[in-house]
Image (cartoon, rainbow, N blue to C red; front, side, top):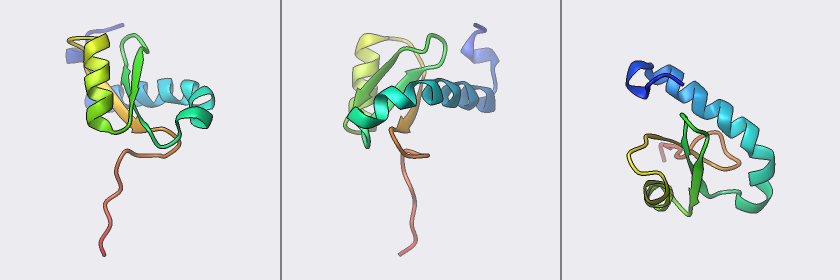
Length: 83
């Protein structure tokens, strides 16, 4: 796979979404609501209670990687609302 420094932000996001789509069926029932950090180069991932937990787990397992984050079972990690 090409070096992540050479791909655009959109390509990075698209790769992350593609990997998540493949993993989604096996993860949703057990980990719904948790956050997944995906290394888009290898497809390796780590799961945490929130972004920080997922990032720390992923960094410990896969140092020096860049991760795509998504909340399992939801389209985004955060939703901004105007009260």
